[in-house]
Length: 430
Ligand code: NI
Image 1 (spheres, helix red, strand yellow):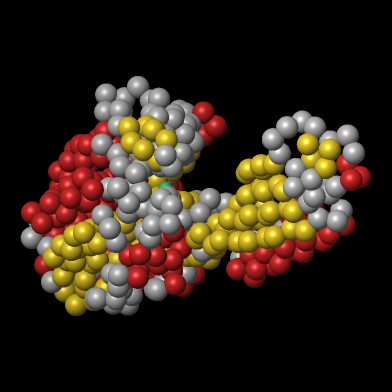
Image 2 (cartoon, rainbow, N blue to C red; image 1 turned 120 degrees about the vertical axis):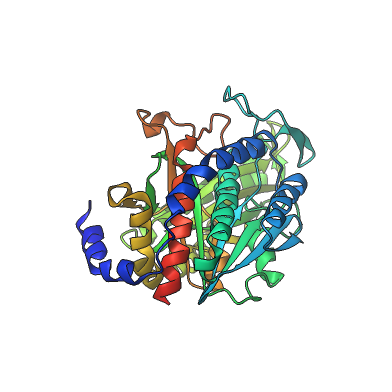
């Protein structure tokens, strides 16, 4: 166990002894819910739905939560579900969040419950797959709701369950995801004091937890650069302004922002140009070229600086060849920031839930999460749960968002333990 963890654990043992104890039948409840959790997961896995189209998923969740006799609000934020459990002991209001959407991917894993679902995305016919594991998130949170309800008398405070649609991004210009949940006031009534969430990870050992205090996952920004040149015959480039060669220089320049201008000892920066489109024929110099890309940063100041430098780089390089560049940005997610005070207070709960030897610190992640928006409403803590089968090397595991994505279900129960422990301990910490 890392020294930091050990000292934290020792420093906080007084909290574990003063925290609201989980009832004696907790172990039995966990055992009973596990097969149900796995069958729910298989159901959702076989029946995935794209972002903002989680009609059956949302209804299934809502119908189940209603059988628990807790307050259920459905639909919220288009296809989502919000539920409220009032515990029998006084305490704070805590939110637990699961995202519920799937991706346009054709599943290749030969599972008996593999998805055969097809749908339409961006005008194309696509396969649909839970290729980011949100099926596990739904099932873990449903099982948590079941257990906390069974222990209701002992639960300190109020628990808000957020089953959120469209984490992967709402299609087109539709609203959706965490921002819409917030806009609909789902964290305001009752007023949430802390938000917890987890993400399954196919390349982290099964049943283990990974966390990071402070900036954890990157902000995602999209950018578009349109280079305006002047058309000419391909044999006489001096007669025009070539937007393609200017774009090539701009792409080079963008990578120099990362390698020469940003202080990478502070935090990593990624700039990727993902598309470039220009021209129709080999011997025509076109009038314009358009490229789009993504920016990942883990520090808000650096994010602003990257914006400014991309604009300056694109405009001045374009100007040097007689072209102009129009640069625009679109912010997609914020930095997922784990409140350091909250992490310090609640890390012992994760250690108890998974076993201290199964909890470790994560590096920065350049992937992004719309969970980041909840952090603007209340202190929040987002961590990873491993689902890599024992004996498999991380490099051999199917990455997220791919046809080979695969999860070992045997560690899902650790997610339920983590949520239950957080609710009970945080209730007494406040
Ligand atoms: Ni995801």
